[in-house]
Amino acid sequence: MIYKITYASDNPYNNLMLPGETQMAFNATKACFVTSGGGGLVTVVNLLDFEKKKYSSLLINGFGENYAFTDTPEDVKDQENNPHYKIETTNKKKIIAGLECRKAIVNDLTNNKKFDIYFYDKVKVYYGDSPYKEFNYLLMEYQHTKYGLPMKVEAAKVDFSAVDTAVFSVHGNFKWVDKRRFLEEVKNLKVPL
Image (cartoon, rainbow, N blue to C red; front, top):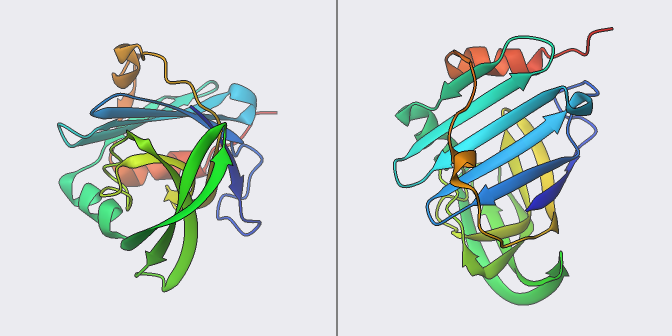
């Protein structure tokens, strides 16, 4: 799947390297999000293994060091419960990327606001390590915050072909750090002149 990403003008990452899309591959228990920015010089990969409850992020830096971290159980609990969502499905429908999707209303109990999402109810996807952890349908249009960056994500292209399971594993050399250091590296990215 390919998702288009948009950001609020007041986002905390005030740089030009923010990606405009992310790609997701998934199977019954795993998902992999690959997001590139800075003209492809920087890639962040999020690996979600719902079965093993293991969630890792990789920063592949074309002009610097590569970093990685795996969420601690405390990180996972925080990301799954902050913000805390209550989701109510509706029968309203909308076509997104050629699929008939259903609307749901997300009640963000932490931030006291509501927003709409759209999902495809014929495909199950497990979004552990996120506030959508219990809403196991393919999200087609939704809001999400990752690494402190709020974004709106909308499916642009869907392909249900078989996935090479190698995408769910770590390949290459990485400096393994804690989450705090990883986020510092992501926030401080600069394009060399």
